[in-house]
Image (tube, rainbow, N blue to C red; front, side, top):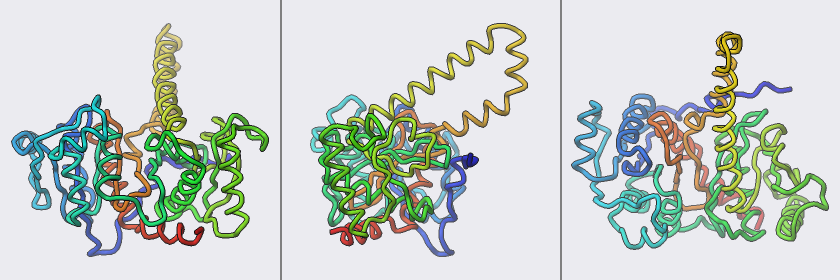
Length: 358
């Protein structure tokens, strides 16, 4: 059994001296914004000298007061006024089109105009996807963008793709996800030959539905052509997400989002039941105290805050989508993920790989 590296092992150096970047942060996005977004911005500026400029996008008055409250003073910080917010409950596309001065729209516009290299948001996921798709458009050769969400795996991490951007995917979309996900794994996670599989109801080749079978056949043809930048594993099951060498797990956005939310809910339930069981009597409490370090290690491995955010792959710009309940640490790490994608030139590599496959 290979010892699983923690999320922090995926952190990279931030390029050679002089390699600078600009990040637009949707400061009003998320359940606990703007307190945690301001805190995350403060910590990111302190930790990542490669950030030349960080735009805090949102209501100017609220953000100025928040920066004063958290003693955030940095010449690299600029507040960009955006008086509107897309709520979590709003219809994504309609809200983006109607609220042109929303924080996610203005932050994405900064990327479109070339003033920022990436946009980071913990707000309405659909709005972030819609804003980036409508404003930035797709990369050359990409049909649909997809969210690559990291899950802890026995061998490091497995990226679930798509985790919610495209619920009605076609086989050709998943071929694109296989290519984009493997490129991301190669250049950001430093995995030479990523292993890619498709989520199914069994590992046997005959398992699956018409959609997964058609997708598998399409991907197999491209793998056999010798142009695919990955190793094809075929059908995979839920077990494989955590226990086998799997770098990218393909699925449509509906299945991916269900998997992601089920994993989160299962983790919370198990944690609750474990606490209840360990506190049942003094003997168990003593044992829990002795195993405190092990419990902390497990918690760290599953802690979404360490992973930061999920890249929206396939749009003509860098977009990182963070969890809606992100803490300041999660926002800080989402900004880190953005800097990694920028520094590793993920998008040009995706375009090159898509052209090679044809």
